[in-house]
Image 1: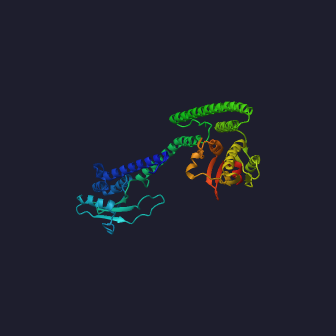
Image 2: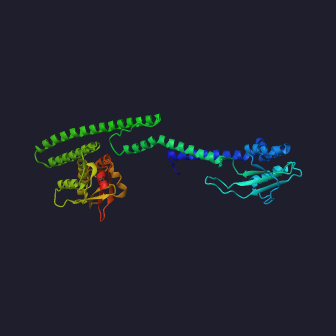
Image 3: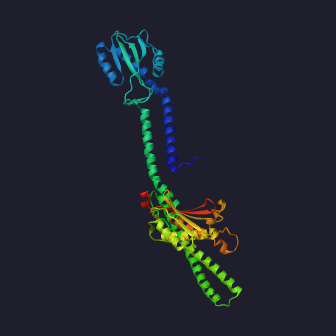
Length: 450
């Protein structure tokens, strides 16, 4: 089913209303000729009344009577001889046949009578509808004169040459356009609100939405702003609790580790120290996860190649463990170097853990800069790539943390990137392995330079 926006639905409603109005006007116009009033004011009745008037007045007063009749809307002239009877019965059916039917009921006697259609008049630059025809009715009057009436055979009533129906339709369309523009103006704050609400979930900080529009919309915006503040408060409380617990646990684990180091060297001592180290790594991961929910500040990176090169140099714990293929041109991204360091550290750790080596590459993809961390490990199946981004999800099902980690690394990466309008993609690497692709939005300077 086709889903239309609010403005489109209003346009459709207005269009249907205009169609119904025009249809009602057409039906009313079709029924109008049958009404008694229209019959009294029909052209045939006007012609008959004018002929009776001309018969009744003296010949010397007929010219003044013709001027008076022309002044009230008739097109009348008096001629001495009967006009040529050509194109008889060739009048257009719309008016000619109607006049013929009405004159057939009149008692004309032996008067001269002619009904003919003159050639079409050329249309003007503002003519609307079919070309006008002229129906010429000639009737003899007393004294040997012939009264010639010229009637415009127009299908609609016209005002200054323009059909009244066309003027009404044009006015209706103009009113509809003004109404749609007014409605679109009133719904513009609602459109901005939907876009802003859609971007709320991408970051962790509340977005202050200005209160604009109707009173109901202002109330909705006020409620959304309050909801953002409550959600941010819940996240901050969770972060504080998790950070406090992890910090206290790390303190006790450090003291426990020192006491274990002072114990005699036995196999149980070595295993206990290994358990303490695993617990410390788990606590560190929990602290990292808590810190990832807070947007880190700092200046955005002006040269991505230089920043990644410095971070890779710090990870060269062994020969040829991490390689770098720079982009070769300066790319400025909207992300602080501290946040990028945490992202690269987690992804590089995964690449070294599962593939034994990390290959880092930088390139530009449209309006984003891409940092690709590739490995030659077992990879991640397509159906599990969405699951591994959730907290505490590990592909290694065993309880050994040295094999599968804590299941928070990719979750931390995703949260940091979400907070900076970035994205993380996991793709298969050519030749086997996995590519973790970090997409970072380019700064305005880099977009213009391209």
